[in-house]
Image (cartoon, rainbow, N blue to C red; front, side, top):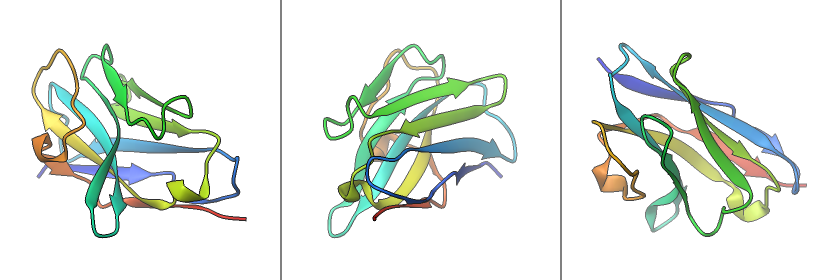
Length: 126
């Protein structure tokens, strides 16, 4: 059964950095985009960033542009979300999700994604 697993969450002070990882478990699809989302109470999943299977297309929510960087190492079947200059309002549960298929651009719409991880907690606090 295909699953995606996040890791790398934790507690960090404002201005600090964390790197989240996302990898498939079970088997590795040939082509899949990855989106990162975070939970917002009362609003569901808020989009953070996405990357296509080739890594050629990425996108970011306005709230994280210039601070977060998404990348992938297909040799390791792992997608990374580097989070710098973290703010208390970045505190949330972060989920990675996979959209199976070969696409020219990635999308920041949660309902387009097929498989979701269990989430990893990120807390930004002094």
